[in-house]
Length: 463
Image (cartoon, rainbow, N blue to C red):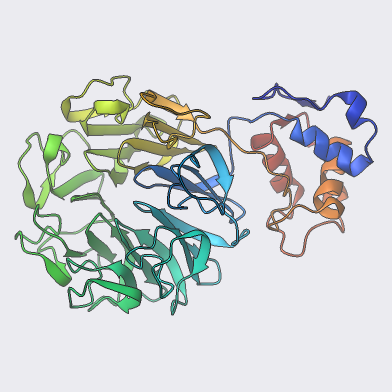
């Protein structure tokens, strides 16, 4: 028998109301009464300074947390616009392929190769030729064939198909990699000498690229050694880390970390032991983090570092400053933790990302879990406030959207009929026949069923 789980919020859609609606709208009303389930079809997650964004399987984007500068992309900004639950980024529908959350702005590489950014733009980090803050996505000028994006403090970069990189925004320390320290660039510049990059990551004031030959090049601010080239000299063009290879990389505030063959290597600022080498001494060349031998991904925050390990079905382990619960091990008092501790969750994680005061993981089921400081709603737990801290991972409140076929908008003639057929017990082609939107990304019954079950909490659907 079809049933709906108990709603996260009390549902006011009584049967007496629902029964008076046409069939399609009745089905939609039932879905509106469905619960926030414990899974969401997310495929990527990115933590900014005090906000978080996640990429939906359909190509839509959800964001939550601080929205003072419009970094959530929902068309709103200002004091009091914090969002403790996911909100939909407007203007890009279901077109996103990769996202990155920066300090107070966010960018997305679209499926067609364009890049759109939103949020704070004082230093041109949105790349649209001006410095006007934007609470909704705007296109970056002069970028085509982008496959990934990276956002730092006040600068942004795009990885271009073929291996080149373009960057824009603040450049006072050379973080754009274009060979100068001109204060800003309001439009993208080519990074010098990069032709075979496979990944790019932006820190607060520096940027790093992973090359196809597994070498690493970095540029920008280097007072703490975050470029890893053996010096503390700022660089306005990429420098390669000598005799070092990597398979993934993540740039934090003033340190950088990478993985290789299950091990983690970090360099730069070592406040609170965030490099993981058992000391608090800054390093200008990579050092191996202790106690990690099965890492598949690393996330560098401001004062902490986390890794996803393949052991125990995908745990997350963290070290560094434990204040505010950002390590996720149930401990909140401010302390320096030099050895990895395990985030207390029974989930199988597939990815991890670190913000300034919080950390998030993406589970194999497609849901998001976050922990740490929640004063600005960055954990996405449905509430926030002064002193609000989560010392163990919390499910981000899922958002049931009525765009069932994933075409970017709700339409009663498509989504309404899909819902009505599904709730009537139909399955297979009987559900999808002749009612999919023109840009549908969920086109088969298994895809639609999974969405209804995981995002909307519907149970008992036909096989």
